[in-house]
Image (cartoon, rainbow, N blue to C red; front, side, top):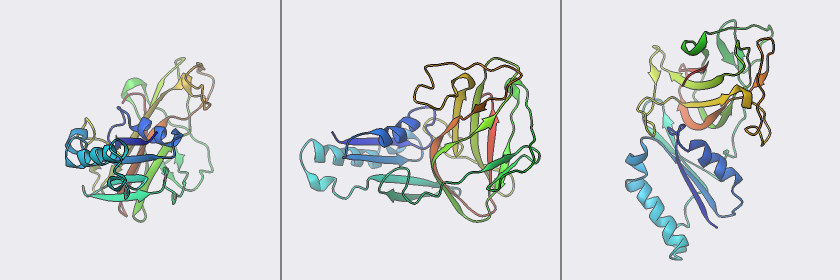
Length: 245
């Protein structure tokens, strides 16, 4: 059965994760992924989306192979920090030329970077009002495209807590760069969330609960949604763990 998964980079609270992960797990040999920017109704329900849907149905309902012959397996509208959009194609998702990169958080300097942090340290925030940010200044133009996740070590005074992780971009003058999302005009690069007691990494992670205690420091990995954006040299990226969205 042919599969077309169409999603919005700014729809983390809707079905973004389902679009990309569903495409990865789909068993069909005939599957395509297309991801767009901006509001959902402004593209998918307009010329861009209608053309896509019509060509898909013409090929697989009407038998017109020519309507879909040139469609790439993966079609991405990559957001740029200046507000423009570039189209990106690939043979599968995650993209075949992905350079998987680990960024290490430094609690002492509230920064993050590709080099491991030698000294252990901790930082804290209070209840639903607090958060911490770890920043990285891009030394060159970089493209962030693919699924994101974070491995955090947390202590909590409660038996459970919600962990939200937001990846944001900032201009050199400190102004946050936001994008029009599926339902929010101020959408960050990516965001994800996880209830700490459901931190298990296996496929049954949401079938069992692992409450913590104030004396333990469990490892938790909130998965942030997939993203596709390009940042210029000198721009700052910030990873912000928090307990609210």
